[in-house]
Length: 200
Image (cartoon, rainbow, N blue to C red; front, side):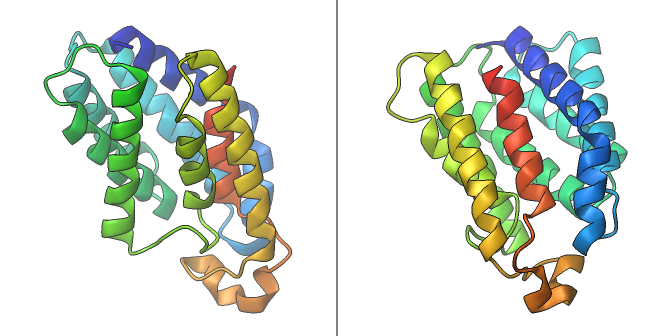
């Protein structure tokens, strides 16, 4: 995987978020402020445009630039969280122009660890992590990249679905307390959409 691969990936995710913009807004209006579809669509579009227009080939620098563009275009809690994740990825991929699937998994895990460290959140708390962590685990143990990403997408869907049984403890959704149980988390759905785009 190289700069072109990353550009393609961000482009596909941006398209997926744009196509699901209204759905994500609807989900977020149930126990949030309703800006999820807007922030995810705008954020990934901005990150994609930054990568597309850049002549940089160092993947670490590419992800750092994407993180900054994403954070500016998606000024929301999840926008900040994902930009923090991208910064963790950037540090791991610094000085690499090409990477293997194993290196990508290592970088994604670094991104997740950065989110958990800075946001004080973990799996099982009804957040995007409930989709992203299973997805990254789903990438492991498979040499065929296409199969690996299909496994990851399946795991992300199952992870997002599991948030229905959880109580929100972070962000605006936490105000709903017990009333948040029974509703799928919009952020987790956004996470599964990311891996759906990558699998496709």
